[in-house]
Structures are given as C-alpha cells and as structure tokens.
Amino acid sequence: MRIIGVTPSINDQTGNITVNQDYLDMVFRAGAAPVVLPLTDDKEALDAMLARVDGLLLTGGADVDPARYGEEKLPCCGENAPRRDETEFYLCRRALEKDMPLLAVCRGLQVLNCALGGTLYQDIETQFGGDLKHPCYDQPKEQVHFVELEEGTKLLSVTGVKRQKVNSRHHQAIKDLAPGLIVNARTEDGLIEGAEMPGKKFAVGVQWHPESLSDRIPEAQALMNAFAVACGGNE
Ligand code: MN
Image 1: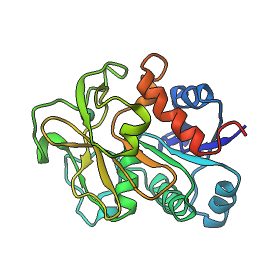
Image 2: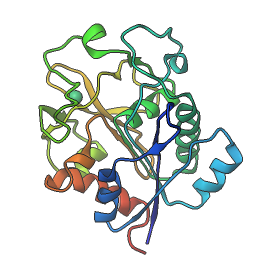
Image 3: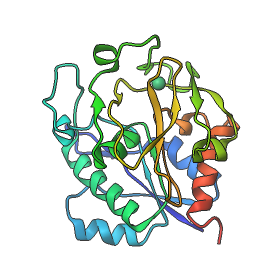
Image 4: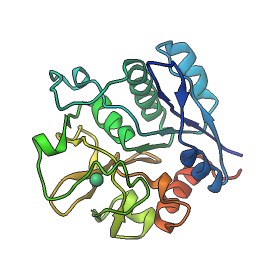
C-alpha cells in the first residue's frame, strides 16, 4: 500500500502537533496509508522522510509568514507558524524536484505558490474585496460558493466537474501566481481558488477543503483518488 506523508499544524502554546482526521480518512478511502510528518528544519531528516513516502499532502493551517514572499506583515494577517513554514517550503520544493506527487490544500496551496515565488493577499476582504465571503470557519463542511474549473487542467480532468460548489475556510488567497504554476479554478469574481504545475506527475492545489467533503461529494474524493493513483495506486 502506498504511503502519503501528511503535514500537521503546530500549536505554539502547547507544542502539540495536530492533523484533522478528515485528511487521514480521505487518504484511507483512496486505498493509501497516511503518515504524519514531524516539523523540523533538519533537512537531512526531511529528505529521509520524503524518501520513505510516495506522495506529499500539504494541509490547511496558519498564515504563511509574509516575509516568505517579501512583504511586511500587515495587521490583517493572521498568526504564523515559522517552524511549519520552514518544514513545508523545503518539503514542497524537494517533492517537486523529485516529481513526487503533491496535493496541496488551503494553506498548502499558499505554501506551494510562495515556495515557487508567488505572493498572497494577506486578507481577502481588506486587499481584494470581491462579492463572496471566504472565511466561513463556522461552516467547515458547507458548500458556500462556486468555483469554475479551467479547461485543460489536471483538476478538471480528474474531477470531471467544471462548476463545483465548495466549502471555504480561508481569509487569504493567491495574489501573484508563481512562475511554473497555472490557475485551475477561480470564483466568479475572479479570485484564484486553485493552481497546479503542468508537466509534473501530479502537483495540484485547491483553496477549499476536499477532505471535509470527500465522504459525500464524489468529485472531492475523486481528486484524492487521482492523487493516490499518481503515487502508485495499490501496487
Ligand atoms: Mn473560498
């Protein structure tokens, strides 16, 4: 069974790392085995961990430190997680170098974009505006707005649904897309809700949370299933 490395959140007060069980269940449903990867700046240890997994799942969580994309932190930016940034930026870049399959969810998409030189809106409402409410933290599993998938993308080809209604638990989003990425989903008001890297086996990011939908929404689980197949399926 293929093994998928899953990155955790860290609570600075308690020191505990946590992963929402929904991510792990989505991986199990795809016939793969998740393992949670510890956070560290020890690159040798991170390389050793990556060498033993078949794919990398970057999960949601705290805001990326704006210094990572060359900006001053504004009051509208939320809490950061420096140790997590250090871990995930390295894992993300190394996975892409090795062409190891990568699925990036929410903060994971933002890490993917920033690791490759892109930037973020530090707060959508303050810096982008738009017609939609994105920080719907009290409705984690509710499909609150639509996204339109772009033709010719991996995301559309593996989910097969051009217009999807998704959940939304973010207050940041991609501002400048990194070189090498293409947009795979947008809202009707033009906000980027997903990006991917063409030419890779599987390097796909979405701003919503498929793990919170995948127990009942087929296209959400289809994304995970395609990721698991890219990782080697059930060989
Ligand atoms: Mn959204």
